[in-house]
Length: 390
Image (cartoon, rainbow, N blue to C red; front, top):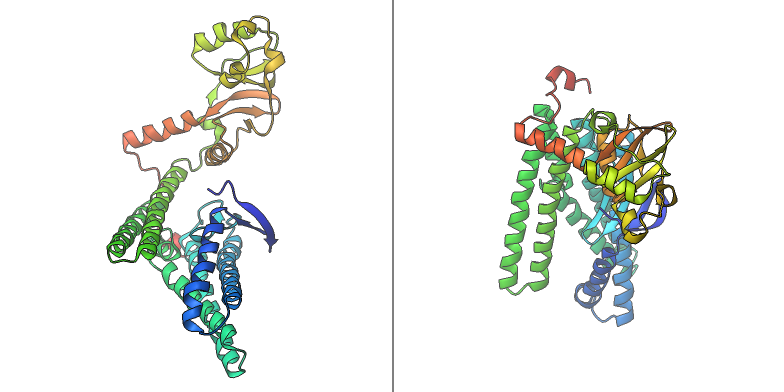
């Protein structure tokens, strides 16, 4: 999701990253605080003072966001859910879960701890503000602390909206999941409600544009669009994960693919293998040992006039972890690898022996057939008795 993010440091074993879009929102916050908010709250300060207040407020706000996401990450780790890292981006922060929580109970606690942390931070900053005012720490310091108390309170309340995949939407899904035992149905219903709230935000934003609040209106529209896209994509991802649950690469691959030997010419490879069997991806095997593969991108780098004089062994891509997978790898994991690496085809290898080839087309075709048949891809519903022991 955040392929261009930059790691800045590691905290409690979690990589803290910044997406380039964060720079835009950080600059906007500094500008709005230094030119609008703080000059109205504290009069008579210099431009440098307002800028310093704005920088401190912005940095402390994003530190609060990191703590909010860190709380999610620590609880997720406690429940056995791996976290890719914590990323700050234009719409705030996100803890990137490697997988969905394993139960409704774990989903609830992972989701609710974020807003709880923001409420706690709001209380801490408010208390510091009261102490600072009593100690006459200065209007500027108190104003920054008041801002941090307010912004954390707003963050907590906003995240409790039942707009999936916000924290409140995940709490709502956890409740639905606990009642029905069906995560797919719970995700569908939570995503639907999240979409309605997203449309409402977009509508309010459009009204704001016509009411003269251009910046606020545009921001609400952008947040609404983000929530709308996130709700739909999260449901689709849940649907795919459920469909591929308990499926391995071995059960989804194309076994015994057509292969080439390293001493074949490229012309022979194209005419005898690729065109004859209508395939553009051909593993290279010698004496039962897989060496690598040749595909259309490899051929495209070689002048066609040289195909007859060029052997496969001179140009094939060597086998490696970036283009091969073991047969027992979960199908959902290879789909994630395809998405992350941009590689659409993998050789399935046991030791040095080629078992088959798995492609994105194989996975998508399986999902399409499920959809056409109207088969419920989700796991069987859990009984109340079983859920009570989770």
